[in-house]
Image 1 (cartoon, rainbow, N blue to C red):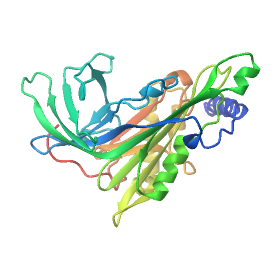
Image 2 (tube, one colour):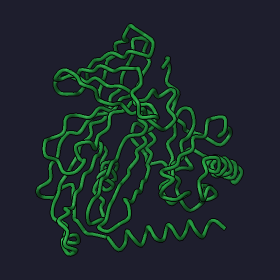
Image 3 (spheres, rainbow, N blue to C red):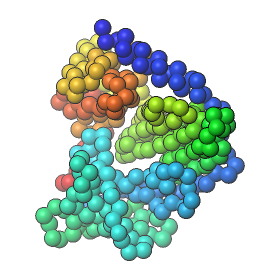
Image 4 (cartoon, rainbow, N blue to C red):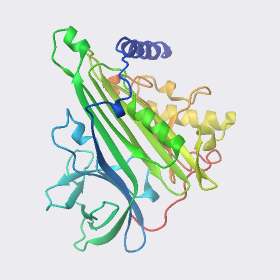
Length: 343
């Protein structure tokens, strides 16, 4: 029975987290922190009206601890064809005030496409051009910022490390979007400030989908405790459907029918796909009546996501499965509208 190894691994992870539990206070307001505008999510428009979205990192302050200066990533996606994972963009050499970006392939190599971008002085918008593979003519586009990201970083001595004779410091970094809705902003800041480790916490709250009818947020944290074998990863996703012009927190049953037939159909598809990926405990990927799954609704279907130890060992990474509209036929609802135009 595979439930036992999964449960055992989960208990080990929980025990490790509990033994290293810390009370750091509100790290987003801690004295000595460095705080800066880390980037923005922009809506782009090609000449034929095709929309795309691109997250752009702004220059980080000098002297940040650890990898905090790289906490904001550059990436992009076309909403019409989005399946829950953005394409990462590598920053190339560019003149001052300009951005030159190239997509990264799964192999880690740079793809042939190029984005050239110049933002306005206040970064609220900008212009650029997109050169596609095999095309000599670049397509111009305009940009409008739809979400602004803030970041916080700090470092201070770690009493736990010092007790063991180590000078390793405690390092904290957080990235989070800013919203005008109070309830949404409170959840975002709660996720961005969490930390129960004695050496390192890196938190990211990022927008995984943004449209007039739906906003999906992904809150993840990487933590590391003194003497631990490796980092620990955890995530939580939250969705807001627009109702009467206001964002309303919506759960899984707002997107997939709660009927036994639909839950069984979706569960069977998830377990099958996880099994095809060779996950050690694929059967644990079935929908749980008492546990909200991690998922991203998109126009093409729904991406499901699991943390390490949930359906496989730590070495098997962070699994995901994408189920198309056809695979969800008759069970899915409230998926965001398809965007017009060509990619």
